[in-house]
Length: 141
Image 1 (tube, rainbow, N blue to C red):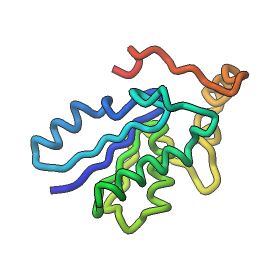
Image 2 (cartoon, rainbow, N blue to C red):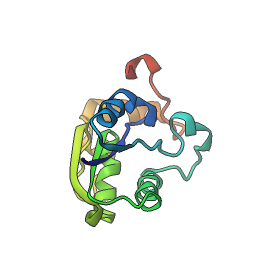
Image 3 (cartoon, helix red, strand yellow):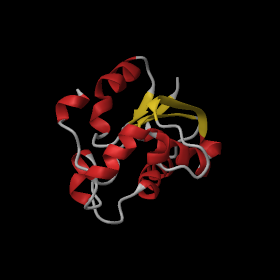
Image 4 (spheres, one colour):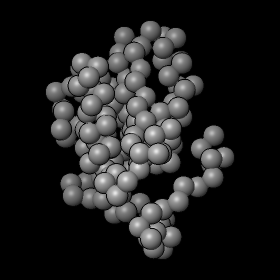
């Protein structure tokens, strides 16, 4: 059996993996679905310090506190940015790295560098105040 750490995308939470986690649990796997700081049910924790580095630390904290090793680390969408950073910082804990419809950054790239140009431009335009509002919840169901 394997141990999975599943990392959600922007504007979601660990809850978005509920159906996948149930199927993996049913087959005898261990599954961890952390919610990143400032997102999902942890939205109340958002601050000017909430960034990719903090999200990487969130996942590293789960790996450390749960004493996980030989994990399958999977990131969806923005979660690809997070798992890339986690893999860089804790390579000895990871069996497999999975990008599920995710951003796959190269060295030194930001999310806006990896997104299609039109989407990146739209995010820049709507982030005039430094924050990008989430899309409707229906988009994530």
